[in-house]
Length: 316
Length: 312
Image (cartoon, rainbow over all chains, first blue to last red; front, side):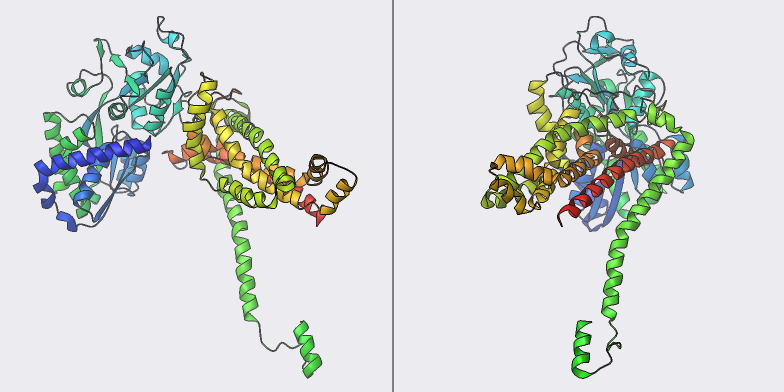
């Protein structure tokens, strides 16, 4: 499983490196060349991880002296390290919380929120599941409510078959968990607890693809990478069924589960040349990296906003 | 001392006076003491660092709620702290592991000690011990990808992808070497005279093995069992990977479960804020685990001592 994923990422890295060499070769020499040394440490959301990891691979290919490490211990876990000054930037699948921002302020860490891609949080079921092609927000809420006892698909909708429901999802550290519970159950963290939780989305892939009655949710990227093993469920929030896709996430029709993905670099870290060079590269090539890593790129308006936000953080 | 006496006899020197102060001896003594002290101090350090947050935990959550209620959701919006599902998960998986490891471990020990020719023994024992050197993370994926997918699914189609049974089976395989090796040592230590006496009375090989050697080595064998059980209770990686991370108050091994160790691993790897009640819950579970394995180890040490007194 992990091996396949690494191979896929490597293939993407090579193809995107070719694309980038063709259209952006000049920018990498401008941003410092290959004599840069040092380390860049990024942690945070496992949803954003593939994007930053691909940016890191491409950047390190051009700057072999710089070691960019990207970890994925969850948005919340990442912010804890970030606000202790242990990392230079944090990937996040939700906005920073007030108490996390207070921790950063107490440690004297300035940061900005950069929206680097869009995600369509995707609800997935087993390939053999032929009945649940579209679920309403109410049905999802019924399944995932904190006091829910729904244990069979026929309790979700009367004409669904008698098949035990097996639930998989991100753990409580995950920004995906926070976002999903907030949108579906109306309160962040409000979820039934009797499901198999994991911060590693591959475990959810494994769980749902291995259980006929399985249901889980995670970022769109993981679905695209595993589309041969899983089915995505269309979501009906009142205006008909909408499948998660690049288009529906960009034009805003995939509600309520389309969401922005963020990277939070710290201003202090950007004072180091290798960190600045990495983020210059990341932001300048954001669209190509997002596409190569199977993320949903920003639309024009969001892209202009990203460049303005980054200039404001790193410019001074 | 004896050299000093020899010298005094030969040369007439004062035997009570040392010719050279032996600093080397003192240095070695201090180094050896430090080596022994490190493990003792570490144990004390662990006990204290686990005990303090645990006591803080129990000042907020009553011990009765911890030990006697059946819902464990400390990381969720409406937290509940009944540790029984974790104890249940640990028990179910340990029982499965022991059911695999004791017959197979003892069987291989009897074979190695009583039946195997020296040549076979020379190859088999190290091979068995290689099993003990496999990293537990490898065993974890073996349980998930091989045992669950290819062995258990065809037999039990309704089995959960993450389940207690495959974790228990693989954990049993993992502790076979512990049980086999220690039991075999105990049987090898049974004096040859006992065997010879039994043969002289006309006993068969099977009778000698099962009615003479095994009972004579029983305390050592039981100590091996207890050590194996301790290892199973403390094992973390296999259950984290293969048994699911869902606290589940059930005896059905086909369902996913969470053990005490996999709760500690999963919660500890996440972002629980230092000092919060979720954070302290990790230590409370750790304390419980420590107490359980401490008693298991004490029993095993007692048994080992008893067995030493009998034959050495």
